[in-house]
Length: 393
Image: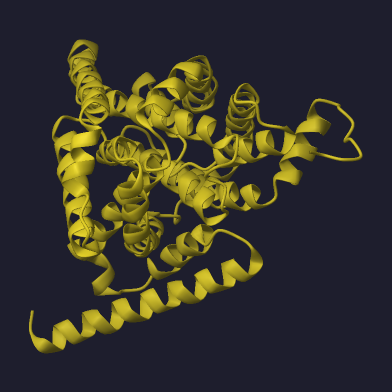
């Protein structure tokens, strides 16, 4: 890259990042998460020819944003809390899989697709977006609310399930059969379990490795450790972000607080690039042809996912507003749904367009509804024909 090309890249990236800063400023004044603005910015910029946004640097920075997001969320919990929450919410997680896989699978069959394509669409509607939900929780200052452990538990279970579901779907798409897919599922399950056990058993050792009086040493040690574990998890067919999340779980005490303070600004920059890059990948040119099934799928699966969030938060002891917040938090679909749709490209006509529009609508609706939980609470009460009390706690 010569000096002129480098100058163009700096100017283009600088203008885009500065624009994201303006969008985040506007969202902050409105009391909203900036995620919807980042997504819309990506959608708009995707129609423009901006070479700097199509290089490997932006994609790597975007991936790092998700990894750091999950890592910093993990710092909020201990290993004992995580395992306790996973046990507590295991039945809700099973309900989540049943309720939210069904709408996509059923619609795929109604559209005349084959079973494999319908399974892909079922996966698209099943999995919530961890990155969107957790970033919005952070933006709105709700990481320590009573309903948050329920939300995190459902998201972690879904991400772990995707570690097996993705290779299973890939095997079915290439005609490898169910047995080959189940083999990949077993490998992913063993890898995820090994990562969790390692995080629990060696947490103190990791803390000693990271801890130091110099902030520079802490920053470099923590970032390097997170990337090593994320890369190892990816090699073992477990999600890299889940590996990073478990490293965060393993660290505790003073070193966790220092690491969070040091890495949060880096996370925010890279997370903004992730949502921008996410919007860049969405192709909405074929949306008019799938508008009606898209609308039906959005409405039905938003309700089924909200039911899961509501019940999980109730089990966690949250009040009505906390349940409404949890219901809204799980509505957003995102990166994993797009990965599934891309994996199934060509399996059925309109699959990618339907998934792109579906993700776009719910990725924007989720964070907005999280800002206004009273709307969700009112809708839920009307649907169940329960009167709204004079005072909601």
